[in-house]
Length: 129
Image 1 (cartoon, helix red, strand yellow):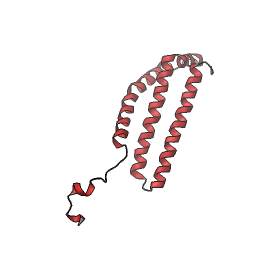
Image 2: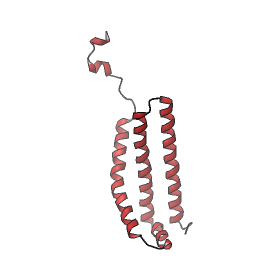
Image 3: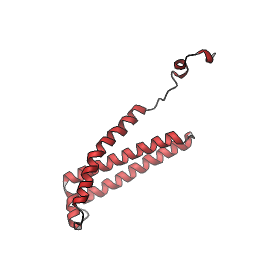
Image 4: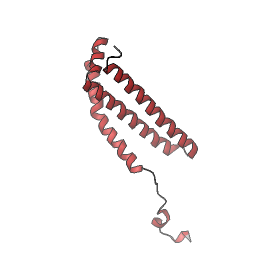
């Protein structure tokens, strides 16, 4: 009997119930945010080329630079884990392996971002110098 159904009738209700649109939008938003943040970072690093250690620490200690660096870290790790999740979703077929891999990737992204932010905050508040 299913051979007599229209293609729409066969797939109705069988589509993805996951946050595909939200995931897609987050990838695009983080990509757009990364463009100016990366340009700012590259420009800043070129400007600091050859600078003394103290000058680099002072650069990081400026509020604007610390905040922009934290935004760069958050956007980078979030964008990266979203991209890796797409690859896992597309190429890992075992649901258990897929779930484990996604959990590991998300955990690693949070852990690495938190460590990076911790370092930025320490430098910004003068704990490291």
